Amino acid sequence: MIDKLLIANRGEIAVRVIRTCREMGIKTVAVYSTADKGSLHTAMADESVCIGPPASKDSYLSRNNMIAAALKTKCGAIHPGVGFLSENADFARSARREGLVFIGPSPEVIEMLGDKVKARAAAVKFGLPVTPGTQDAVAGDALEAVKGIGFPVIIKAAAGGGGKGMRIVRREADLEEHIKIARSEALANFGDERVFIERFVEKPRHVELQILADGKGKVAVLGERDCSVQKNHQKLIEESPSPGVTDAMRERMKTGAVNMFRELGYCGAGTIEFLVENGVFYFMEVNARVQVEHPVSEFVSGVDIIRQQILACTENTLEIDGADGGAAGACSVRLSGWAIECRINALSPGRVSKLTVPGGIGVRFDTFLSEGCFVPPYYDSMVGKLIVHAANRDQALAKMERALSELVIEGIRTNRMRQEHIIKEKTFRSGVFDTSYYESVAKEVEHV
Image (tube, rainbow, N blue to C red; front, side, top):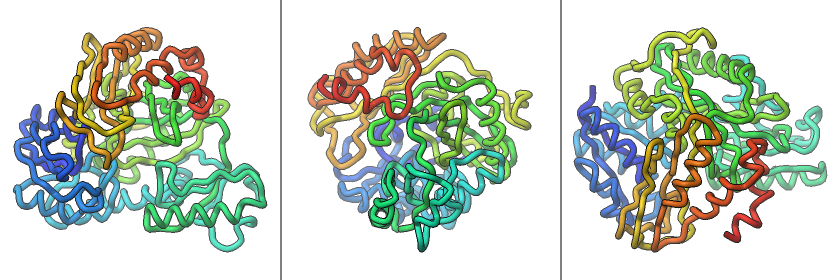
C-alpha cells in the first residue's frame, strides 16, 4: 500500500479524497493555485504545494507542475479527481514514467475511451447498442455520410465532451456550416478537430452505470444513476435508481458494461453512460474516472468508491466478492433504498459570510466551503453537493426538500432555491421526464 498520495485537483473532490485517505492511513498532499490559498483542502491535507497562478492552464492543467509537486513531496501516487487532468492520457503516462501510481485506468485505455469514435466501436464489439451514426470521423462529403441516418442529427467532437464541439442539425442545408463550427470548437477545446455524426435522440433520459474494476477481470456494478435534469448538458440533479429503467433493461446494460470493462482490462472507477428512449437504450460514452455524482451510488451500495478506486489501482484488488447471478462474473453488490443529489452552484464569486449545513440520518453535504472562505471566479461553479438517502423515492424527495430548506450559504448567490423548486415540481416528482425537462421549467425556476 502507498503511504502518501498527491491530489491533482481542488475543491470538494479534493476534500472527499483526503477524507478516505485519512481513514486508510495514507498521507495526502494538496495542490493549490494562488487563488485557492487557504482553501479547505489545503488545510485538511498533511502537506500542500502551490502549483501556479489562478489560470487553470498555469496550475491545475499543468502536467509538469503536478508531477514536480508529487516528486518533491515524495508521493507514491497521484489521484486526479474529476475534470482538469483526470482523463488526460499524457498525464497518466507521465506519472507512470516517473514511478508514480496513477489512480485511474492505463493511459492506453484512457486514450481509447477518450476517442468517442473508438469508444463507439468498442461498445458495438461488446454487445451494446449505439445510435445510428458514422463509423469514423467525418471527412469529405458530410451529406453522403449522413445518408441512412436521417435528420435531425447531432455532430460531436471525437475527443470531446461537456457539450463542447456539439451541434444539433435539423436541415440538410445547415449541415456543412454546423460541421465547420463544431470542428472549430473541437479544435479550440480539445486540440483535435475531428467530429462524427449520430442520429439525434430528441427526448432521452440520461442514465449511467457506476463501475469498479480491479484490472484483472473483476468488475462490480453499483447500480445506475439518472442524470436527466441538465442545463446546457451540465447535470443538476442525479438519483439512483433511475425511475425510467426496468429490471430487464438494467440487466442488459450491466451485461454489456461488464464485458466491455473486463475485456479492456479496466482498473479503478468508471462510468458508462446511456441515452434511454421509449424502452430502448443506446451507448453514449465512458468516463474513465470517478464522477462528481458518485456519492449517490455510495449511498445505495454502502461502498466507498474512492477507497475501492485506490485499492484497485495500487493493489489490484476490490473489497467486493462473489458473483450476483446476473451479468457473468460481475461482483455482488446489494443495493438498497433511493438516493438523490442536488448540485449547489455559485451564481457569483465572493466571500462566504455564513454557512449552515443540513444534517440528520441519510443526509450528506460534500463541499469545500467554510465560513470566511472566498469562492474565486476562475473555476467550475459547483461549490457543494447535497445528497440524501431514504427507503424509497417519495421519502428521499421529502428528505431532500427538508435538507435544502436547512442549507444556508450567505455572502454568495447560489442555486439552492432553484433546486428546491425543482424538487417540489410535479413533473419531476412524477419521475416521468427526460433531458428536455429543465428547458420546460427554466422560466419559472430561474425567476426564483
